[in-house]
Image (cartoon, rainbow, N blue to C red; front, side, top):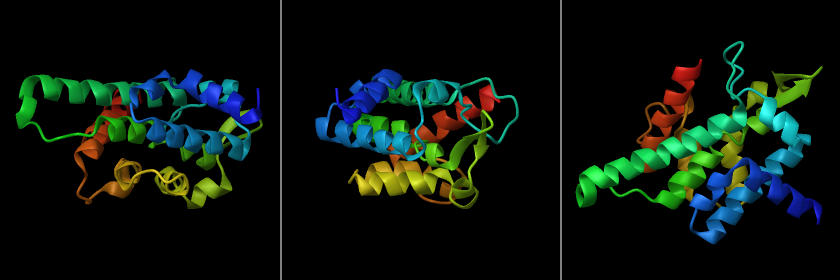
Length: 183
């Protein structure tokens, strides 16, 4: 198995929700972003499963991978409930973009964080460029749709005051639900 195939297998193992993206080209581009972010600092599966999802709060018990997965699944569940209750009266949501954007919103943290003396820290890079910016950069490089880049860009404080697309509204709230309830 090639190194790229191994990394793709790692990404799919970390994020089984990747299969919720029904557009194969979008799925491959989403995976490619994760592969590049993992390669940037040589992240291993063990490190990825053990780093906290945020460095803003001390003693966070929720891991990075679990946070991403929870937010993806909450976003899809929210969209499903809105479909079920509101049907055709609901604002349309592109489920493929919703899942891709939810999976990629925090991918930039793999550039923002680094391990020093066995502990996660904000890297010098991360002190200057927060994950929404580096995440958009990765998504742009891999030619993801602007709607997905919009979700990455507007999901955190950097998106305050911006008019969010429906997919970004859903993700922004699920991200903060997970953050607020576990910190």
